[in-house]
Length: 156
Image (cartoon, rainbow, N blue to C red; front, side, top):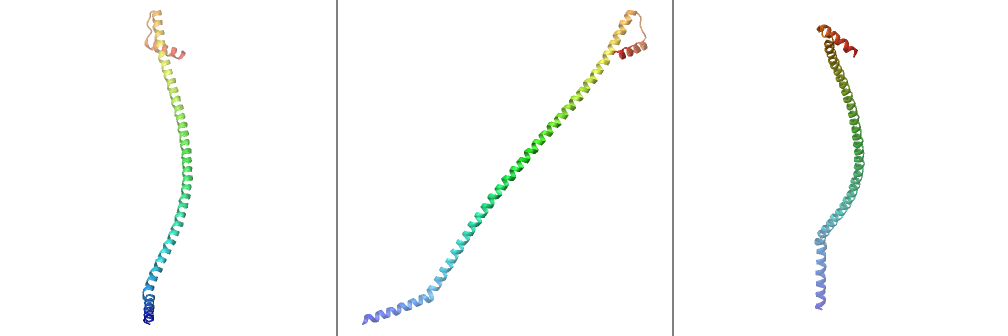
């Protein structure tokens, strides 16, 4: 019955080995496995939170982009209105300036016409006096000439 004693000895050695492993080997291994499971679970939870945060951030960014587009189109529309207003104001000022220049030129032309008339009156008077002298063959004094020129100028 050597065989039975060997089996009993091996069974006792195996039970001692299992007890030793259960007492000293498995608890640290289980603790490491549980810690690793906890880290993995925390990592998965953090990944889910990060994914949710990413989705929220993308939605918020898309909303802000829409708002920015709306705001930019409003600003562009306002700028276009302002540009049109500036162009209209510039046109009005240019018209006013043109009218002012035209009126100034007309006034200057009228003054030049007046001066030309005065010069022509003086020349006509001098010609008339010269003609009268030749007709009369006599010379009229200078004071009488000036008086005659003024009289003829006022008549013309």
